[in-house]
Image (cartoon, rainbow, N blue to C red):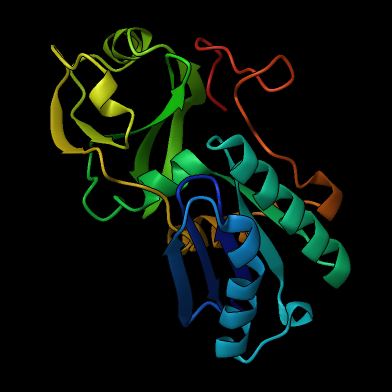
Length: 232
């Protein structure tokens, strides 16, 4: 039986919520960068009401765990944990970079999807994904890099690979020598693109207890992921 999953994302400027029962999908999105704390819970209530469901009727809660805005990343994790504890549900953390990539799954074919987010302080968050059975699969760990280091990594790890370049970090890069076949610096995340990834995680037994709803910052000693760490 398909799982009923609530998903939400507050990691970037847009606040988005989506719900799927495996057949129908209901979603809402609002772009109010400084209002996430005020609008997230009412949006969740609205989506649940439209679906005629309560939290306790769900199978799991999925949330965008980051990277992204520190405040937004923390909010998504804390709200997921609180709701999951209250309704005795498991959580499904999903990379915000994977969510951004998932929006391109239909057109990806053999291309490498590279979502890049401006991380400020002269750095970018970058993901490296490819489509498999209509799902984005990481080809390398999400990383925090300098704008100069990212093209070097792509050239070394994925030489000549056709790239879909998405996200607001791409204008910071020198793209000379990269095989870019699609370019969209305005691309962002949306909770509706989380649902397929969350359903796969649920079916794979990858849902976690509520207390493990943790944010991923990629910046700082406790969450740093080295550029050359192997995928997996």
